[in-house]
Image (spheres, rainbow, N blue to C red):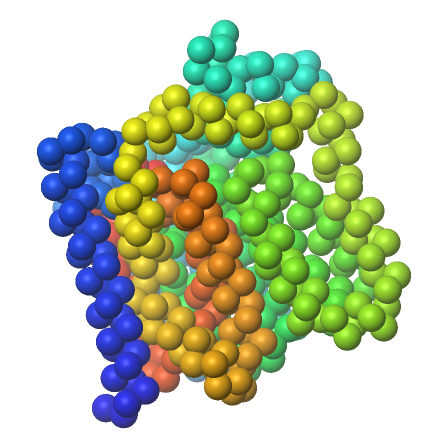
Length: 439
């Protein structure tokens, strides 16, 4: 084993030790003080070994991706690779979700756990609901919103209201929306990496984006949908600054605006946007007109919601109060500020820990792949900012999915990809078969 590979193993072992410490310390704190509000820290989950209907398909998808993924990613035409990545990611997400069965794994997630569908009827008059949205955020307000509705700007809930209006009612349709749209996030990341770095690295990253342990939560969470919107905002910006159509810039601005109205925390994607502009600064200098469609697109969603009567800043201020009224005000910052990072290890896998080590070396020594390493570093910085804010104490295996997807391309720097891919697949299968996750 050469030195570089040995250091990769050390990085993976360090990540595994971080998870072990978070589990052991977390169980002790929860047993003694009951202040973590999770049953299997650092995850919101219960220990419950179980197979399920999706088990055979999940094992088959994992085995096929490990065996054939790297070779296919290297040989397929680019467009075929993107379609294959989306199809395989969808199969991986669905099969993992179906380990818990259709009802618990998909259909009830956005009704009983994330609560968005519980308030659809309160949006029968959408303009009135938007005008009065902030009046129901605090716990002591009349008819206060459920936690997830209150915790996000109204574009999150409004998405499912519009699905309902289109006749796609109920948890099954909402869950499949999140799965199918969420699975496109890996395609968006590949598009951005190819545009900003090089196609070779994008192809090497593709199997890791498809077989991410994050898929355990992407089939059970609206955050998969949020992750896809944010990822496409970055990808379209990458296309725009590297010589693409000005329409890509307008589309990017539109999606960045929507991202901020899906989740308050995703305003941190401005760091990735700024990194894309930095990496594409030559294109921006050559075509300064790009700023016009970008900023015009960026203004659309905020203008629409503001015109409808929703005040983003006031809502965020009230959310901070609501956060501290509930479990967020009790959960100990001293534990979660590092245990959240253990959650990140579980959703990105040990391969990503090794990949991040390699990305750090690339940045320090300015080797080939610096542009990809900078993009990954921006995502890591955004994640750390979210961590230090204290507004993400626990449940980050779901909340941080949008950031986690941008750490996975660091795996493109790894040697022996099949071994690392196998580790990723095994981790995801173990998580979904040994635990009943809360999402």
